[in-house]
Image (cartoon, rainbow, N blue to C red; front, side):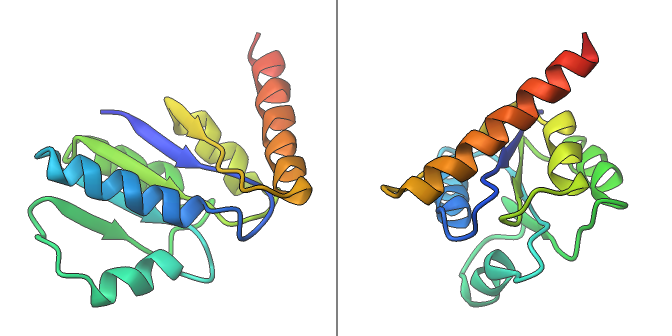
Length: 134
């Protein structure tokens, strides 16, 4: 099943909001979704605490780190239609690991040059990892 990571090295670029929008639409269409929260600020986990969601259609994996991400994603792929990964706004091994596990990377960018620079850094990381793989 598809793994989709939401990445931008700048915080506040809209990663969590974009993930929530996609998750709710996928659920509305009848899909089962696992959300993986790797952000130490846990904003998506806080949203889940107040949300009225069906445990059959959506699940949250929280406190996921670079050391546990691969196992968490592999386990979720066998149980859900989609795995959505919310990443922190930073360059880290966690970002590279998530990219390697994902079929799709969404890079939210709002209307600021700093968001665009953070998005460009993600593209540079993607190019670097692609060159290393080839």
